[in-house]
Amino acid sequence: MKICHIVGARPNYMKVAPVLRALRAYPDVNQFVVHTGQHYDFNMSEVFFRQLEMAPPDVNLQVGSGTQAHQTAQVMIRVDPVLCEYKPDLVLVYGDVNSTLAAALVCAKRGIPVGHVEAGLRAFDRSMPEEINRVLTDQVADELFTPSEDGDVNLLREGICPTKIHRIGNVMIDTLVRMLPAARHTLPRDLPEKFVLLTLHRPSNVDHQEWLAEMLSVFADVATDIPVLFPVHPRTRGQLERIGNRIGNAGLRILEPLPYLEFLALEERATAVVTDSGGIQEETTYLGTPCLTVRDSTERPVTVSLGTNVLVGRNLLKLRNELRRILNGEQTRGKVPPLWDGHAALRLGEIICGKASADASESRQNSQGRASNVHVRGTYIPTDRDLHEPRDNSILTYD
Ligand code: UD1
Image 1 (cartoon, helix red, strand yellow):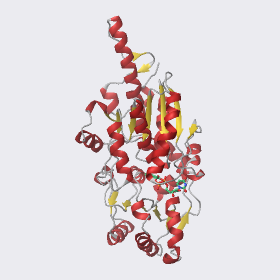
Image 2 (cartoon, helix red, strand yellow; image 1 turned 120 degrees about the vertical axis):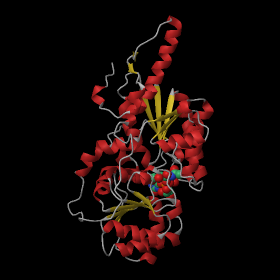
Image 3 (cartoon, protein in one colour; image 1 turned 30 degrees about the vertical axis):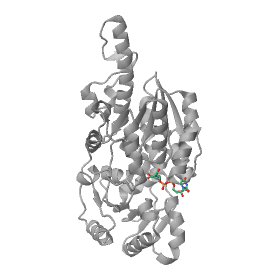
Image 4 (cartoon, protein in one colour; image 1 turned 90 degrees about the vertical axis):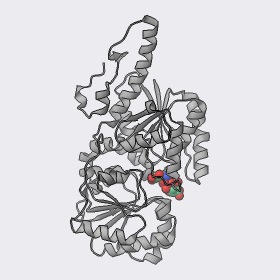
């Protein structure tokens, strides 16, 4: 079975890494990684491949930056011939970035089966490019792998056939669980005892200079009480340069975008994280770190209902009050959502490869007129219980 993984932007790498690893357990699976080149700086891409111990991508389409339309169109144009040549049995796309939708559309039109990892998330805000990418990718995908129950509910509401929906849990948390011990070794010696970790990159926050300047002046105030560490995304850096004079020497500790391990270590140790990222809402929920999200909506409601996430929207008074509560030790204490257990990619592998084996076995059964048992052609076919209950991998045997 030939499986092609398509990734393009920073949050995709943590999601593909455990899937690549899990599928390596199946000798019949041949894997191929295409990087669209949506993110191309060393510290937005290559450093993640190195830290996550992934081989460099087999192909890099080098689409680079551009408008939404340009970037999406370029991925489509450049990935099409690659897929025609490689002829995968299944393409896996990840998350909600432009590369995800572009690749899914090409597959749908070429009749190549496509699986969406992190399906079903909805912010119910179509002004976000990511929401458009999520909705459309899910409509054309053949297999939809959801991280939480709300994902299944959203997909069913949109008319997706239930047999296509597989709740596997959160693959990004698989990577977190595996890498956390190594991440802890990267903590700088001179790290302050208490600090706020800030990240901002959504167009709705950083493309409007007035709003960005207003927000950063809140953090300039906060920084007089507690250090604020601010690794700056390239999109945000451009704007910061433009408004720099207005916020003056804000006292923020401005950093380059951090590699995965270094950032994860800071997330675990931070007194509070303030962000507009999707993935960081999930990571802080797993780590139990208080998180304030500077957005009006979230596509990851479980981080609010179960986790440590509080939406502060565009309300700077609420942001200040919630920060004060956390600094006073009155933070939300959360729980880890079900199936965010480090084994999501294993469940995905079992579904994909189990399905392939079941198809093979069915055709054999039809031709030979007899039933097969759980182990077919060297691939483990999971039972319902296997798929829905976290368990120790060591009891799984692939023969
Ligand atoms: C993209 C994703 C977003 C994800 C984020 C993570 C979409 C619609 N958005 O947003 O969902 O949370 O990645 O980072 O796909 N740039 C560089 N170097 C790079 C990459 C980008 O300088 O390596 C610059 C680009 O020139 C551009 C800006 O950053 O000016 C934005 O990049 P782009 O990939 O368009 O979107 P992101 O804001 O990164």
